[in-house]
Amino acid sequence: MFTGLIREIATVKSYKNNILTIQSKYQAKLGDSIAINGVCLTVIKVNADGFDLELADETRSIIDESKISGQVHMEPAMMMNDRFEGHIVQGHVDCVGTVSQITPRENATDFIISVEKKYIAHIIPKGSITIDGISLTVNDVGADTFRLTIIPHTLKETLMKNYKVGTKLNIETDVFARYIDHILAHRYSKKSMSWDEVDSMQMSY
Image (cartoon, rainbow, N blue to C red):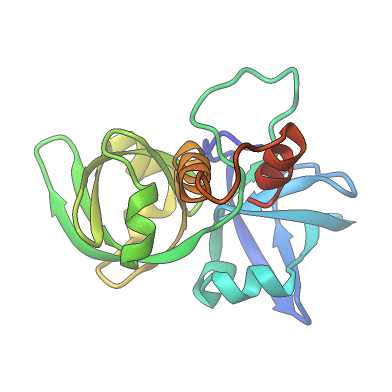
Protein backbone atom coordinates (compact mmCIF):
# COMPACT_ATOMS: atom_id res chain seq x y z
CA MET A 1 0.00 0.00 0.00
CA PHE A 2 1.08 3.57 -0.69
CA THR A 3 0.08 7.03 0.51
CA GLY A 4 0.36 9.00 -2.74
CA LEU A 5 2.99 11.30 -1.21
CA ILE A 6 5.92 11.40 -3.61
CA ARG A 7 9.27 10.53 -2.02
CA GLU A 8 11.51 11.50 -4.91
CA ILE A 9 11.65 12.59 -8.54
CA ALA A 10 13.65 9.71 -10.01
CA THR A 11 14.99 9.19 -13.53
CA VAL A 12 14.43 6.36 -16.01
CA LYS A 13 17.85 5.21 -17.23
CA SER A 14 16.50 2.60 -19.63
CA TYR A 15 13.47 0.51 -20.51
CA LYS A 16 13.93 -2.61 -22.61
CA ASN A 17 12.71 -6.21 -22.59
CA ASN A 18 10.09 -5.19 -20.01
CA ILE A 19 12.80 -4.17 -17.52
CA LEU A 20 12.72 -0.62 -16.17
CA THR A 21 16.01 0.72 -14.78
CA ILE A 22 15.59 3.62 -12.37
CA GLN A 23 18.24 6.03 -11.12
CA SER A 24 17.33 7.00 -7.56
CA LYS A 25 18.82 8.03 -4.23
CA TYR A 26 16.48 5.60 -2.48
CA GLN A 27 18.21 2.50 -1.12
CA ALA A 28 15.88 -0.23 -2.34
CA LYS A 29 16.03 -3.91 -1.39
CA LEU A 30 15.39 -6.91 -3.59
CA GLY A 31 11.67 -7.66 -3.63
CA ASP A 32 10.59 -4.19 -2.48
CA SER A 33 7.35 -2.75 -3.87
CA ILE A 34 7.90 0.69 -5.38
CA ALA A 35 5.42 2.90 -7.21
CA ILE A 36 6.71 4.59 -10.35
CA ASN A 37 4.27 7.23 -11.60
CA GLY A 38 1.59 5.45 -9.60
CA VAL A 39 2.36 1.92 -10.84
CA CYS A 40 3.27 -0.63 -8.17
CA LEU A 41 6.30 -2.63 -9.33
CA THR A 42 8.73 -5.09 -7.73
CA VAL A 43 12.48 -4.54 -7.41
CA ILE A 44 14.27 -7.40 -9.18
CA LYS A 45 17.81 -5.99 -9.02
CA VAL A 46 19.61 -3.40 -6.91
CA ASN A 47 22.19 -1.22 -8.66
CA ALA A 48 24.80 1.20 -7.35
CA ASP A 49 22.68 4.18 -8.38
CA GLY A 50 19.16 2.74 -8.23
CA PHE A 51 17.27 -0.43 -9.07
CA ASP A 52 15.56 -2.50 -11.78
CA LEU A 53 11.84 -3.22 -11.94
CA GLU A 54 9.86 -5.57 -14.18
CA LEU A 55 6.59 -4.67 -15.92
CA ALA A 56 4.07 -7.44 -16.46
CA ASP A 57 1.94 -7.74 -19.61
CA GLU A 58 -1.16 -6.54 -17.72
CA THR A 59 0.63 -3.38 -16.55
CA ARG A 60 1.94 -2.58 -20.01
CA SER A 61 -1.53 -3.01 -21.50
CA ILE A 62 -2.95 -0.26 -19.25
CA ILE A 63 -0.34 2.47 -18.91
CA ASP A 64 0.93 4.86 -21.57
CA GLU A 65 4.58 4.41 -22.65
CA SER A 66 5.25 8.10 -21.96
CA LYS A 67 4.91 7.22 -18.26
CA ILE A 68 8.09 5.11 -18.29
CA SER A 69 10.59 7.63 -19.62
CA GLY A 70 12.41 10.71 -18.39
CA GLN A 71 11.66 11.89 -14.86
CA VAL A 72 9.12 9.96 -12.80
CA HIS A 73 7.44 10.11 -9.40
CA MET A 74 8.82 7.50 -7.01
CA GLU A 75 7.29 6.25 -3.74
CA PRO A 76 8.32 3.12 -1.84
CA ALA A 77 5.54 1.06 -0.27
CA MET A 78 4.34 2.15 3.14
CA MET A 79 5.75 0.19 6.10
CA MET A 80 3.61 -0.96 9.02
CA ASN A 81 5.29 1.44 11.47
CA ASP A 82 5.10 4.46 9.10
CA ARG A 83 3.02 7.50 9.91
CA PHE A 84 -0.09 7.34 7.72
CA GLU A 85 -0.64 10.47 5.64
CA GLY A 86 -2.09 11.16 2.20
CA HIS A 87 -4.70 8.70 0.89
CA ILE A 88 -5.01 4.94 0.55
CA VAL A 89 -3.26 4.07 -2.73
CA GLN A 90 -2.78 0.55 -4.06
CA GLY A 91 -0.55 1.31 -7.04
CA HIS A 92 -3.05 -0.39 -9.38
CA VAL A 93 -3.68 1.92 -12.33
CA ASP A 94 -7.26 1.81 -13.63
CA CYS A 95 -6.89 3.86 -16.78
CA VAL A 96 -4.97 6.57 -18.62
CA GLY A 97 -6.45 10.06 -18.51
CA THR A 98 -5.56 13.20 -20.45
CA VAL A 99 -5.08 16.80 -19.35
CA SER A 100 -7.74 18.72 -21.29
CA GLN A 101 -7.50 22.15 -19.66
CA ILE A 102 -5.19 24.07 -17.30
CA THR A 103 -6.40 27.29 -15.66
CA PRO A 104 -4.16 29.34 -13.31
CA ARG A 105 -5.95 30.90 -10.35
CA GLU A 106 -4.83 33.41 -7.74
CA ASN A 107 -3.14 30.87 -5.46
CA ALA A 108 -3.75 27.56 -7.20
CA THR A 109 -4.11 25.94 -10.62
CA ASP A 110 -7.13 24.05 -11.94
CA PHE A 111 -6.56 20.93 -14.03
CA ILE A 112 -9.43 19.41 -16.01
CA ILE A 113 -8.74 15.72 -16.68
CA SER A 114 -10.67 13.65 -19.20
CA VAL A 115 -11.21 9.88 -18.87
CA GLU A 116 -13.39 7.23 -20.46
CA LYS A 117 -16.97 7.57 -19.19
CA LYS A 118 -17.01 4.11 -17.63
CA TYR A 119 -14.47 5.24 -15.00
CA ILE A 120 -16.42 8.31 -13.87
CA ALA A 121 -18.55 6.22 -11.47
CA HIS A 122 -15.42 5.60 -9.39
CA ILE A 123 -14.41 9.28 -9.27
CA ILE A 124 -16.21 11.01 -6.40
CA PRO A 125 -16.55 14.79 -5.74
CA LYS A 126 -14.36 15.60 -2.71
CA GLY A 127 -13.08 12.04 -2.82
CA SER A 128 -9.52 10.91 -3.41
CA ILE A 129 -7.82 10.12 -6.70
CA THR A 130 -4.25 9.28 -7.63
CA ILE A 131 -2.61 10.97 -10.64
CA ASP A 132 0.80 9.59 -11.65
CA GLY A 133 1.19 8.43 -8.05
CA ILE A 134 0.13 11.73 -6.43
CA SER A 135 -2.84 11.49 -4.07
CA LEU A 136 -5.21 14.40 -4.67
CA THR A 137 -8.75 15.51 -3.88
CA VAL A 138 -11.38 15.72 -6.62
CA ASN A 139 -13.32 19.00 -6.76
CA ASP A 140 -15.94 18.49 -9.47
CA VAL A 141 -16.97 15.59 -11.68
CA GLY A 142 -18.54 15.86 -15.15
CA ALA A 143 -19.78 13.34 -17.71
CA ASP A 144 -16.25 12.34 -18.72
CA THR A 145 -14.01 14.84 -16.89
CA PHE A 146 -13.05 15.86 -13.37
CA ARG A 147 -11.42 18.95 -11.89
CA LEU A 148 -8.44 19.16 -9.57
CA THR A 149 -7.23 22.31 -7.83
CA ILE A 150 -3.48 22.12 -7.23
CA ILE A 151 -1.73 24.31 -4.68
CA PRO A 152 1.67 25.91 -5.50
CA HIS A 153 3.58 23.54 -3.18
CA THR A 154 2.33 20.46 -5.04
CA LEU A 155 3.20 22.01 -8.40
CA LYS A 156 6.68 22.86 -7.19
CA GLU A 157 7.44 19.45 -5.68
CA THR A 158 5.99 17.22 -8.43
CA LEU A 159 6.10 16.84 -12.20
CA MET A 160 2.67 18.45 -12.47
CA LYS A 161 4.49 21.74 -13.10
CA ASN A 162 5.50 20.28 -16.50
CA TYR A 163 2.04 19.02 -17.50
CA LYS A 164 0.45 20.51 -20.59
CA VAL A 165 -2.84 20.06 -22.40
CA GLY A 166 -2.60 16.57 -23.92
CA THR A 167 -0.32 15.10 -21.22
CA LYS A 168 -1.23 11.47 -20.47
CA LEU A 169 -1.73 10.46 -16.83
CA ASN A 170 -1.84 7.20 -14.90
CA ILE A 171 -5.08 7.25 -12.90
CA GLU A 172 -6.05 5.15 -9.90
CA THR A 173 -9.62 5.80 -8.80
CA ASP A 174 -10.98 5.67 -5.26
CA VAL A 175 -10.55 2.15 -3.87
CA PHE A 176 -13.72 2.35 -1.75
CA ALA A 177 -15.80 3.50 -4.73
CA ARG A 178 -14.55 0.48 -6.69
CA TYR A 179 -15.43 -1.92 -3.90
CA ILE A 180 -18.92 -0.49 -3.39
CA ASP A 181 -19.64 -0.46 -7.12
CA HIS A 182 -18.52 -4.09 -7.45
CA ILE A 183 -20.64 -5.21 -4.50
CA LEU A 184 -23.74 -3.37 -5.74
CA ALA A 185 -23.27 -4.67 -9.29
CA HIS A 186 -23.33 -8.24 -7.99
CA ARG A 187 -25.89 -7.85 -5.19
CA TYR A 188 -28.58 -9.78 -7.10
CA SER A 189 -26.33 -12.52 -8.45
CA LYS A 190 -26.17 -14.33 -5.07
CA LYS A 191 -28.08 -14.27 -1.80
CA SER A 192 -24.95 -13.32 0.11
CA MET A 193 -21.17 -13.13 -0.13
CA SER A 194 -18.76 -15.06 2.08
CA TRP A 195 -15.73 -13.40 3.65
CA ASP A 196 -13.52 -15.54 1.41
CA GLU A 197 -15.27 -14.02 -1.61
CA VAL A 198 -14.83 -10.50 -0.24
CA ASP A 199 -11.10 -11.15 0.34
CA SER A 200 -10.77 -12.56 -3.18
CA MET A 201 -12.48 -9.48 -4.63
CA GLN A 202 -10.14 -7.17 -2.70
CA MET A 203 -7.04 -8.97 -3.94
CA SER A 204 -8.21 -8.61 -7.55
CA TYR A 205 -7.65 -4.83 -7.49
